[in-house]
Length: 90
Figure 1 (cartoon, rainbow, N blue to C red):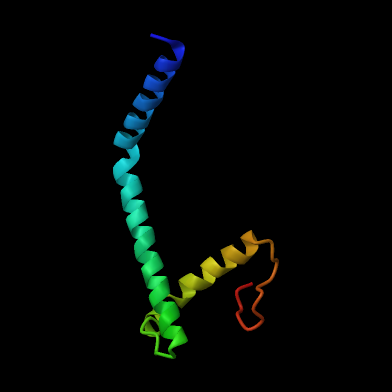
Figure 2: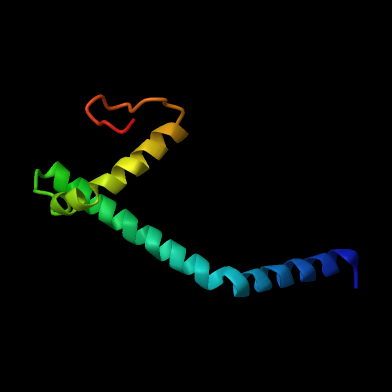
């Protein structure tokens, strides 16, 4: 058996073992990403058609958590203060 043939066999074996180890997890991640993408498109379409957003009332409950996330985001982006003057997070 040649060296090239052995390298191909090892490469195929590596791909099979990687698929066995990570395949299900990658499938679930792709499925969740597709669901989030669908939700994003729905919300964009609702905004485009001037339909009321049903998530607005639910966001009021998580507003304090969103402030913390927003603060971490704008700090991570290199902004010392909030880019929105009316949003007091700092």
